[in-house]
Image (tube, rainbow, N blue to C red):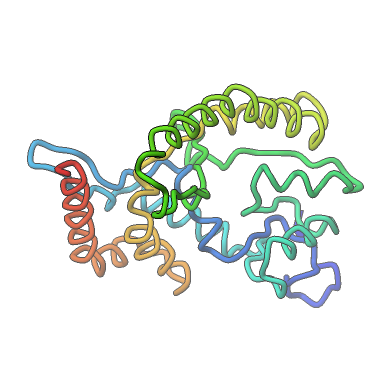
Length: 255
């Protein structure tokens, strides 16, 4: 679908692209999560890294092609969600990556229908789609000045609000806002169900900074697709990161 609209022989912003995103960092998180990578496994000897495998090799090549391919726009002058939406609103890309379902609320006035797609599987052998929760989902806090005598009441209120939100607000958001107000038709509604019903928090997210940034993203930024070499240069630090993570969880469990 990409078209060199000004005919200068170079694909760039304001030409028509097939795929647009905000750099490799944000978009790579849900894509690599969706690829169902084998990062580490539990064995009789404890947790061991297993990410140096053919699936990772394929994932790096596919991600690089998607990010750096001639039909992809990966750097915008307006490097923001609004800038990305502007490219999409002007029909200068077929697919846009990094936006979330909530961003559909800002697309109601578009002059064209917006379609939805889950993040892709890596290959046909993958069991199903995987939708990742955002790993910086907003959380609340209880101020330290709260009297201890009020904590039981406060925790009860939080539990009740969580329960009621799960039964009323969230279903209404998906069934009424997303499926009725923000998109049109049964096909888009089915895509929303597919995305929602496959939400997961796989280990890729837990080990994201060390494994994904240290190997996949550094390779992409360097213009390289040699996974084995990239992994070899990071293996020792990845082993240490895994050991640190296990120690942290053991400390929490022992409290």
